[in-house]
Picture 1 (cartoon, one colour):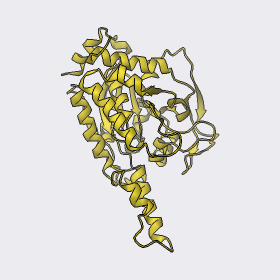
Picture 2 (cartoon, rainbow, N blue to C red):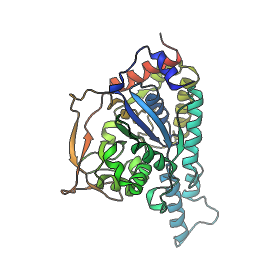
Picture 3 (spheres, rainbow, N blue to C red):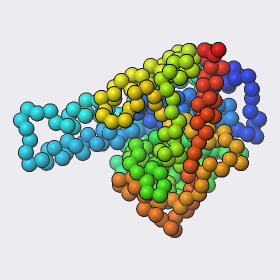
Picture 4 (cartoon, rainbow, N blue to C red):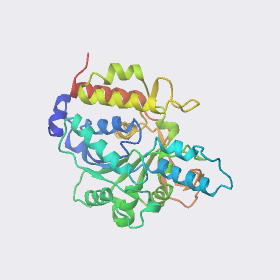
Length: 341
């Protein structure tokens, strides 16, 4: 089915003057929340989704390599013991395979969603530091769309690593004035902090912070406010056809997989749909100033920020509307795939 046919089930239309071109960059198979944000974009009629880029999430495979190197250089080791790296790697994909995993997951989502006309392309296999040739089908796709003669504004919505947009900019800096980047990632200001999407590619983040492109950042102290209980999943998403069932199943399966982790993560019966704000910030009224302008910092290897007084300004969100974000997603799923009361 064509996406436009699916959107007809919503019962309303959006004027052409209010539409935006959107490219979604997602490490879909990283964990459990990207699926929800990808679907949210697909079911939002004001978003003319031009394509989805399946991105890498190489941080954990890279971490395993680093752990193994440290163990190999250790002065002593216990004969026959199971190393920390070996134990950790059993649950992690191998280096260089994460993009393909996300690509295959993207295919599955589109199939279950019964949408067959949205381009899905592969992004870079590795972070910027390990992609010297700047090879990325996703980056080329971004460049092509950015240079298109189209009056509709273009937004690059990044749910994970920034690598593919950074590569696109390095290959063709002229795209900077032709798009707006929206990124779920980074720690709160002013200090910054360890954050998963930032850890994927610190070099890539610095490339974009140094660029002149319009950049909206939604740091973790903001995106983590979009929480959903498993009871809500069962009532609001599970009844919504095959795709609703799959969204719930993969969420619960991933939660069970990592439930051995000590501490407060993961929560006992809730999850964060932290990627969905890339949808809602484009829906919120411009009169609602829930963001501020910030001098783009330099990002250190540990994801902390070093102030950069001479840097250009970026938009940093202080809050997002969790009611709008979740209620809009639930309603669109029910209207398009059934399961409503």
